[in-house]
Image (cartoon, rainbow, N blue to C red):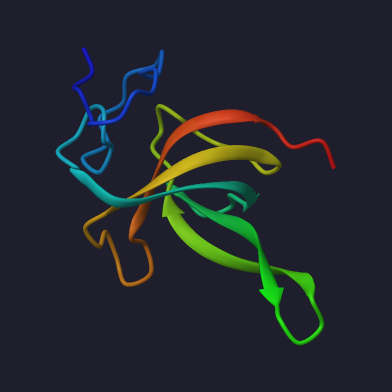
Amino acid sequence: MAKNIGIDVPEPKEVCEDRHCPFHGDARLRGNVFVGTVVASKIKKTATVEKKWRHYIPKYERFEERRSRLRVHNPLCIDAREGERVLIMESRPISKTKKFVIVQKLEVDKK
């Protein structure tokens, strides 16, 4: 049985024993929510998610694309793989570089 994490997302079908999992562990989520694409998932329970956004440059009256890569916790019950779009949410620091947790898999990126 999964607990309510504060936002309306479906709970994963699998159950895990991960203590940093927002559904089955004791991790509490707060703050920012992003959608990004998983670009690497080779490290155990960790994924690298890239988020892109458009930034307006007034001088040239045009937009540029910017990107940022975040290390996120990848719970075993979600297990996101490379190329999938995911919803991530902020939590307390899990390690030196991980401060976000994958909450939901959205779809496979079609690139």
